[in-house]
Image 1 (cartoon, rainbow, N blue to C red):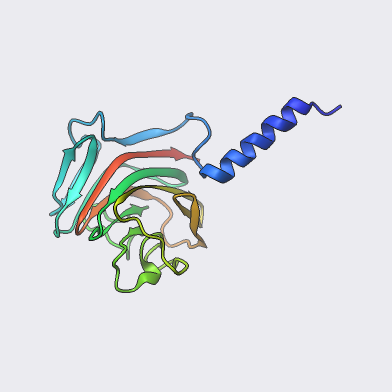
Image 2: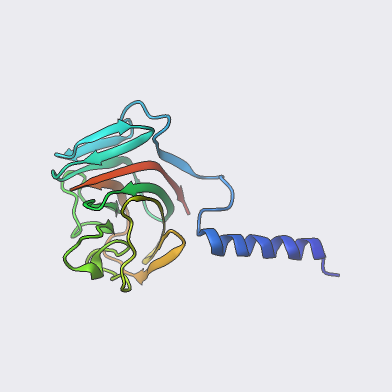
Length: 199
């Protein structure tokens, strides 16, 4: 006999996953990489380039026109990632996944999940993976609001969800493992929270 309570519970869980993305259920296995409200330094991250990183109002902030990154101390292969961020209209930022060179991060040696509303080629603007997966037009905008990126990297499959809207589902096997990097390359970006879970 089917247990009606179990069926209802499973249904609620499925709907919740669809509404809130890959990381909404439970906290087991999640590692906090950025918690702006409780950070006092950049432990766990290596600054690369000339980014102007500071801790401001409970956030990790990158501001200015100089290219710079914060690179995670650990490397990741298959994972779920959740990042809460705010961007202004001039913001040029992103999440770089599976970086191949800690000292020279870029879209040619990592997967760049872009935050760049004013990119001259909007097909690789906000929500895209630069050079790998275009974002459907009209491109979603991130400026002047809090946003949530949810990313799944499992083998050669990469899925990106921005504010509940899937922007990328692609297969690419160039980069299999590597650290994560946060980018500041123009305007202002603020990260309130970044969490990751190996899968």
